[in-house]
Length: 196
Ligand code: GRF
Image 1 (tube, rainbow, N blue to C red):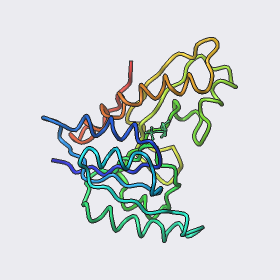
Image 2 (image 1 turned 45 degrees about the horizontal axis):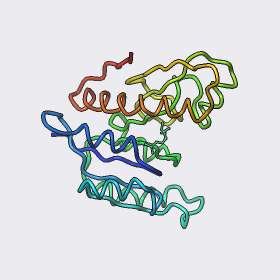
Image 3 (image 1 turned 90 degrees about the vertical axis):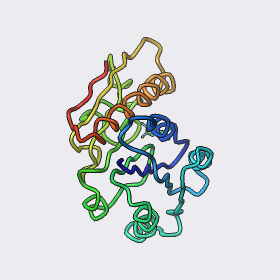
Image 4 (image 1 turned 180 degrees about the horizontal axis):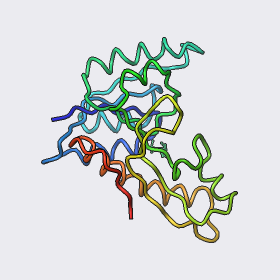
């Protein structure tokens, strides 16, 4: 059974979808939900699901990224995860941290990578006049939002779409894509999943 730690910064809707999927004959189980925000709403939700949680407030560390990550690592290593899932985790990780989990750390990004790495992906797709958008699950490497793609899901951009309406449509798809990718990845299969 693979042990999965999930890192969040906010509401944790992707974390909840991942947690809900890890049941029955699924080859993985959640062992920790951790956040850089001591009051991330997802932490209370994870605790409500009976999952061990940890928070390390990144703010006291200021620019000392390595110091923040060392504190976070104490909690992560104690849970001895096989796989790390970033799910709405909004801190940039240092190459040292990434190397430690390279090949077993996933992230979900709300765009059709390699388009729109970074922030404000939906606003950028709308501004570009794209007729589709979506989300990508990728392995985390030192290049931000640029690791091997493990899954992608597409949605149409509709006339009158706003950043909010597009974000809602993509988020619903994230909640299907990420669990599907995690299940396949935990079974040792790295073939990409493309929805639909
Ligand atoms: C989502 O748009 C996700 O793509 C991005 O963070 C946002 C919030 O995710 N990674 P969640 O609701 O906290 O899982």
